[in-house]
Every structure is written in C-alpha cells, then in structure tokens.
Image 1: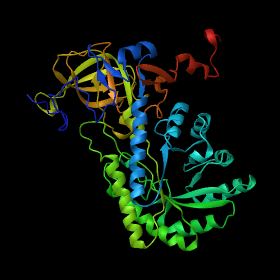
Image 2: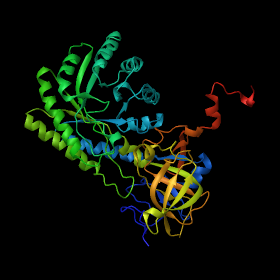
Image 3: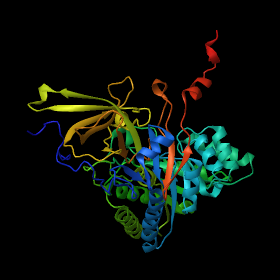
Image 4: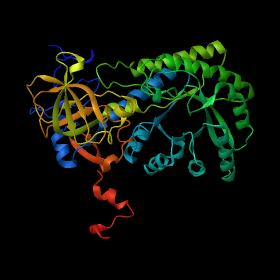
Length: 468
C-alpha cells in the first residue's frame, strides 16, 4: 500500500545505501562495512574523534568546485571578449583556512560585516582580493575596509556615499565603489531569498541610479566601478539573471556618457541540488548563457562588453559539506486524516535547528542516509528532527530511511556546506559542533567544537563551583 505522505519526487523503493553523485561530495563512498567515507575517512571514525553532531567539509570537493566555477565563467567571458572577477560569497562558509583555499584558486572574497572582514584578513587575504558589502555598514567597518585597501565597497544607500567619501578623504585614499541596484527582477525562489523585489531592504531603485552615480562622481576620493545586482539565492533558471543584466546594461549605457563604467557585477545565487527533486542548470551552461546575453545586449546598445564580476558561494561550499548526527529516539506516527496507510517515522538526532536553521527558516528540503553500517532493511518514510524545544525543529522533512534504524546509528545529511555552520546558534544552550576538513584519508579540525563550559564562561553571572 502506497503511503500518501510520500512526496511524488521521493521513491519508496530507493536504494537506501546509494549515494547520489549529484548531491554528495565527490569522494563520498561506502567501505566494506557499509560505513560512509568522506575524503577517505569513515563517518564513525570522524565522530569518535570529533564528536556528534559534526560538520564535515570535503576539501578536495570544495577545491574542485572552485576550479569548475572559475573555469566556467572565465571561458564564457573570453568568448565574449572580456574578463571576469569572481568574489567568493563568504557568508556561505568562512574560516581562515577557507579564505586561503579561495584566494589560492584565484578568487577575491566578498564580505558583508566587520567580522567576515576580520576572518578574511586573518587568513592572509590582501585588500585587493576583498570587497565589502552590506546594507548597514558602520563607520568602523567602512574605515577598516578603506584602511585595508579593499578592491570595492558596494554602496547600498545614498547616505553611504558621504560616509565612504569622508572616510576615504580622511585616509587620503581613492576608494573604488559599486552601486547596488534593485532591478525589480523576481527570481523563482523563496520569498526570503529573493533580494531584487521592490519591497525589501537591499539596493537603489533603477530610476534613482543616475543621480546617485552623479553624486559618487562628484567626490574626488571615490572611483565609480559600476553597477551591482543580486536577484536572490538558490536559483535554478537563467532567465532572472538575464533579465536583470539587460536592465542594468541599459542604465550602464546611459552612465557612460558621464564617465567610465568599467565593470558590471551580476552577483550570485546559483542553486544546487539538495534532493532528487532539484534540477539546477550546470554552471558552465548557466555562465555561458548569462555572458552571451550580456554580449548580445551590449551589441544592441553599441557599447563594449564591460569586465564582469560574479559572487558564487553556495555552489562551491554547499555540495562539499556533510553533517553527521547520532540517532537518539524513533517514533512512528499514524496520520489518520491523510488516508489509509498514512504514517511517518520521526527520527530524533542530537542536533537540529541550531546547526541547520534552513528548514525552519525557508522550509528547505534535505536528503539523509545511514552512515555507520550496511542495511538490508526496507525503507520507511521518515522525518529527521532535532532535539530543540520547537515543533519546527526539522532537519530532513521527507526521506526513506531503513526500518531497522536504531539508537546510536549515524545519519549523514549532505549538501550542508553552505549556510549551516555560518547560521548556527546556541539555541537551548547547545554548543556548536566542530567543523572538520577531510582530504586524502586525513581529517583536520578547522573550527573546534564548543563546550558547555565555553557558553558558561560568557555568562558574567557565572561562578565556578556554583557559589553565590
């Protein structure tokens, strides 16, 4: 009897030990005991050494994706007779080691806070490889960015023009800037991930761009690089990127009458596969179509193709990451109102929304698989949930997991390299997990796990020993 709660995209007869290469890191495989291996290190060994939950980053996969994305955009740009600058979107995942990997691959790094700037600089990133973003940059953050000689600061509102000009003048520097434009293009994604809608916090309206650029050009300590657009995140289709580019190029052409506009930044937001239902366009094809559309529009406007910039993040970090959890309890729930045979197993793990807030925040879907052993069991529709005191504390909404799944089994959730560690919290006073890199059979901690003692020591009322 078919379970009516199983979504159409999820096969009830799926191979419970299979690892879909489109979702899992490139090195993911099972050893002869059925254990998941990442970078040549087994999941049980990783948990024994670093604890559970655990963020695992396949370094080889991360580095391969850096090269794949770079090559895709450089090849597309070369065919259009221009060049490209790639900024890794550090909000996806950032540590000092990650910053080093990114820069070594030829990327710059996009940061949006003083904290991200500090991490990138601590990782040895030079100013020319940095760009500062954000809709509410403080004077301190702007001052640190100018002092570091960042390659660009993205202006998000009129007030920032005077702020940046004043700070650059005080340091006797000429600061390159971009102007973020709200193109009004509605990307096909979750409402909270769409960042080019008219009624939201980012960017300048298209109609206001000429006067903003005139104001930027009036300051001798500012150098206008060009326009910037970001239409959203986790986008599969190319049409939104093309529409935004065409709108910006029309304004770009008008601005050329008043001075040089050497660059055009079209942002990022390229989607990845989290489940079998996701079908993102291959990045080489996406890059080719975007750049080709830019070239065609420039020809129609009789202008040269500007230097292009993009900001990939999720597409690099996301697929390289896997989160490991230990199973605690399981519970079968019959949902009578959904029809005969409607049941779901709730599998509780030792983490949850504090290490992956995306399902609760966006309704994001993930996949999962047993990671600690082989199984000959049939599959049962399961929902993986966390241990937080919230009914919305869901890690994986729909998955077929082994019917014999038991306490202390390990589960692995793929595609968690982006926006899981970076959005993690201490809700319910859960310490954040370690972040570990694996490569060539070796594991190395990038960020150590927190302890309850770490959390207590930030509490200024805490007295060791429980004294009054």
